[in-house]
Length: 186
Image 1: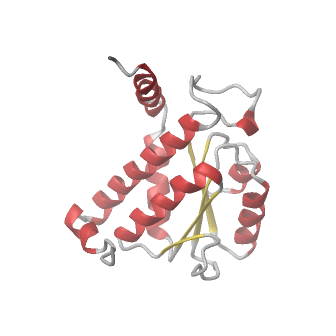
Image 2: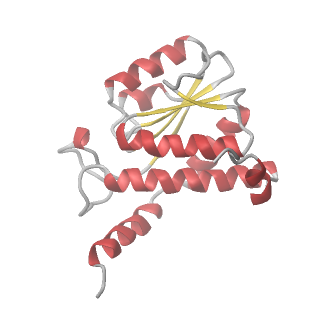
């Protein structure tokens, strides 16, 4: 029996992926490579995707921290704060962005809304199609049969992995290089 719902999800992702600007992804990769350290923030399911990206950046040998973790150091000039937020309107993330900007960090976001409060503060924006509950009533570049922000969140996860591939190319790293940095206490 065909799994219609899964095919719907993958077809939506395939369509939405074609709408993502590769130049924006390259620019975000360049911001990551220029930064002394990278700080990543996100809330809810977007935050879960961002945490997975933190893990892969660590595998690339990048000094990276997820905002709010116990071991996160203070952000400073020369650092990059990357915020994953579909709406760009999450109150707590806006406060974090404002503080980082005041401290001299560069800002980037992966979002549906480049004109949002967070997007407007950023030095680099990677716009993904989708919708979230906070954008209810706003026109979306894509329609989705999935609930709430699922399409954006899935596309975020895949986009972060694609950016890892860009970073591997730019730094000349191989899969084996990343494997050497994989945790070994499990």
